[in-house]
Length: 126
Image (cartoon, rainbow, N blue to C red; front, side):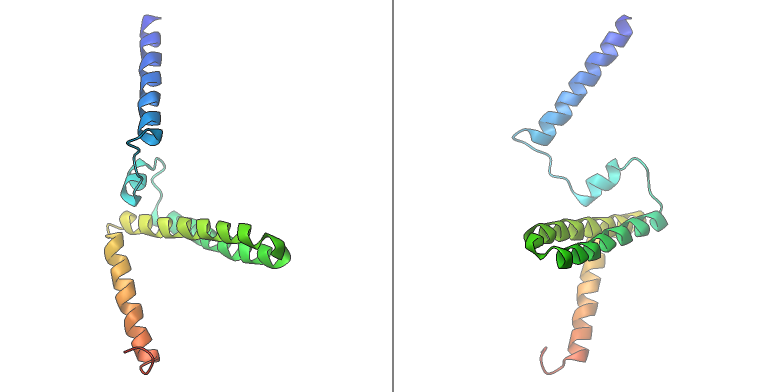
């Protein structure tokens, strides 16, 4: 009985420490690597891609909703921004799943896209 009480007190103290870390003045700022490390279900890269596709699909669906209810454009745009953030996060976590560095992947993508822009629009991009 005493051991159970001790365990319950430890759990309460742990919960309080986590709460203080997340809401206190020295709030923990989440990073992609931290969230990836905390993730409990350890997704496979294939499942991660499906989740990223779902997030991108939700962006498209918000555009459909925006067309149907244009009076709610501001709300839909806020949701679109959030879903873009979710999709970016899932793709960065996919890079980590594959042992890649997300920042390096982004840098390569920017460089490659810039090179294509120069090829397609040589007069506009110098």
